[in-house]
Length: 403
View: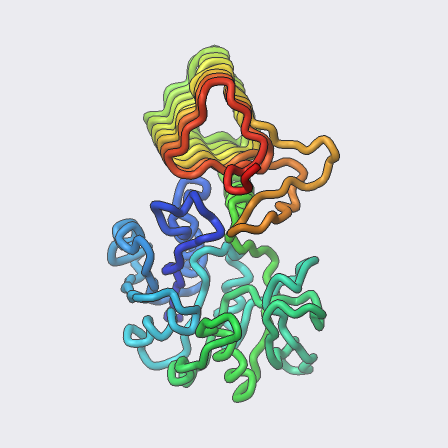
C-alpha cells in the first residue's frame, strides 16, 4: 500500500513547542511523533512512503533519509499549508497508479487497526469520542456485507449525528488521485474530507474502528502520547547506574546516561543518552528525559517531558509538564499542577482559554526558557521561547492573558 504521510503543518496550537521545529518532530518516547506514525504504517503494510513536508522541512528530511525499514521514502513539498487535500495533491506526482493510503503525521494509531484499514480499501478510520462536536463526524449506514458503511462526513457539527469521528486515516481508490482539485471549505482550506465525500458517492467506503487513536494537537496531548508510548517500553539498563540508586519497573537507561546515588526512578521512564539524574532525585510517572537532559540534587520530576539539554538543577519540583530544549530551571523552581477546586486545568491556546480535561497539568516552556531561583509557576502557565523570570517571581497565569 503506497502511503502518504502528512507532516507539513506548523502546529500553531502547540506553540511555543513548535516555534523552532515542526509538530510531527516533537519527541514521544525517544523518537519523533511522526516516526511512530510511520512505523505503524510500515507494520500495517506500507510498501512505499511519500512524506509531505513544509514548515521546517529539513528536520523531517534529515531524520528519515531515503528509507524506513527498507521501505522507500520520498518527500513532497507543500509550499503553503492550505489544507489536507492540498497536501495530498502535492504528493500526487509521487504516487503510482492504484489505491493509496493517507495518514496524519501528528496522530498515533494502533497497528492492528491500521492494518485492518489497509486491508479494507476503500476505507476511513473511525473512533468514538465523548465530544464529537470538536471533530469531523461520520455519517454511517449498516451494510450486511461490508459492516459499517460511510455515507458522508460533517465537520464540527453543533448537533452531531453520532459519536463516531473521522480519525484522519484513509485508503482511497485509484481514481481519487483525480479528485484532489477541491474547492475551499468554510474554513478557507482545501479539505480531504471532500475527497472522502466523493469516494462515498462512487463506492462503498467502510468505517474501520480504531482500538486506540490520539490526535496530538495541543501540549497536553503530547503528554498523553508519551504516556501511551512509554508504557510500551521494556526495562533496559545500559547506562551507568550507581549501586545506591533504585530502579523500579520498566525503565530504560540508554548507554551514556547516568543515575547517581540516592536516586529512585519508577517506570515507565526513559533516560536518553547523556541524560543524568541525581544525586537524591525522584523520577516517576511516565517521564521522558531527552538527550543531555539533567535532573539534579533533590529534584522531583513526575509525568513530564524534558527535551534535549533541559536542566532542572536542584531542589525543584516539576509535575505533568513539558520543558523544551535548553530550558534551565533555577534552584527551588516549583511547578503547580493541580487546581484546589479539582476542576480540569485550563491553558491558553491561540488566544482562547481551553480545558485540558486533565485534573493534573503543569507548565509548558518553549526552548531556552530560564527561571530565576525560587520561581513559582502556576498550573496551565506557558512560557514562550527564551523567556526569563526573576528570582522569587510568581507566574500565576499565562503572560499572554495580561493582568
